Length: 319
Image (cartoon, rainbow, N blue to C red; front, top):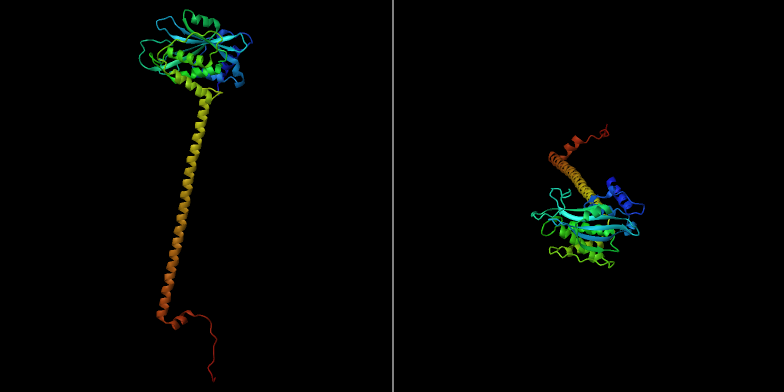
């Protein structure tokens, strides 16, 4: 399903999370993926290996700028491994007509119209992570002992798809961070350390809906294969269904053509039968006319005229 690029990303991801020594940060740090692609990458991990890849901590930050952009920072680890990679999860407006193109991740207050949201996951090394959060305010921290990476990526993908538009007063970066944090905390948080309270933002009516969507998706699909594979399977199913429909329509056309041909042959046979009947009727009428003529002309003459059988000569008596 995946091309060589996604195979490379997948293998790189596995190597980053392994104990085979550090991977140079220049290889992966700064790698940016939209949530659906990140979800695809995580789902490419074999099902038997998924339990070992976990999210151990999520932090919620606010930038100290006039824009006050907010984002999440997740710590990703392999169980039993001392190595970790980090990922920021954030939302911003896409000013391009293509919602998948890179755009600013800030939350400008002057943006009043509804535009596509641009949700982004950025992989970071420890050093790059430290530089990213320097100067930003930590709003909340939540630690986990059983949050599998595949479930976290599923959650981020569902939140991203739940509201695909960016609106300053509702579905902006605050909403995106809060929705993910609230569901992750209520669903997976364990009392390993004290968790900071999640900031209470008013425009978060979609949190309950988002959590229910996540629960429903997890119940229906406990072993996800990723949205790209799902779309590919859906396309295959649609193509198969389209092929079946084409075959069905072709079969209907062939059946109609066959029925038309049979009807044509039946009509031709009926026409021939009708012609034979008419010819027989004409022959019968001619025969009857001939009989009537014979009766009117006298039977002996008619007999002599028509009787050509040989006769034996008889001598007169007395000769």
